[in-house]
Image (cartoon, rainbow, N blue to C red; front, side, top):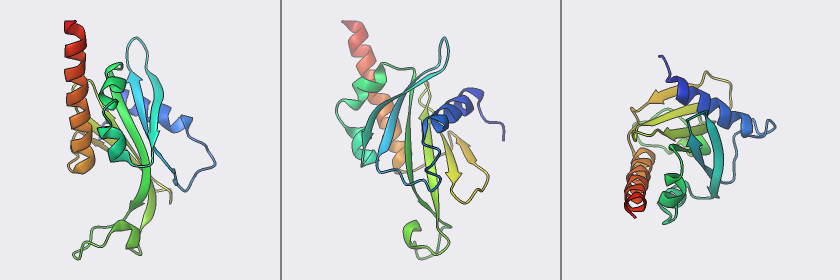
Length: 154
C-alpha cells in the first residue's frame, strides 16, 4: 500500500517526539495534536487527557483544532485477534501492546497507523476506519469547520 506522503511524514514526526524509553506503549494520557502542513509540516501537542473520547468531545477542542490545517490523536492500548465470543483485547492471551495514531486531514479523511510493541510491521490505514474513534474524529472535524466558518464571518 502506498501511504500518503503527508500522513507518513506527520506520523514520523509524532513518533519522533515520544520518549524512546517507552517501547511498551503505556501512555497514561492520550494526546491531541494540531498539524499545519503549509508552508512546511509542523506538529504541536495541544492537549492531553486520560480519556481520548472525552478529549475529542471537550467543548474547546473544536476551537483548538480550528487553528490548524489538520489534527491527530495518539493513544496506546491492547490489540488482539477478533474472537467469536468478543473477548476484549485486554483479556485475550494473544494480546499485544500497540500505539495508535489517527490523523484527520483538511478534507476530514481519517488515516491511522498502528505500531506494535512486539516489533511487527506498522499497519497503515487511509480513510478506511470505522467505529467510535473514527466517528469522534469526524465529529470534531465537523465542529472545527463550523467554528472556522463562524469565526471567518465576523
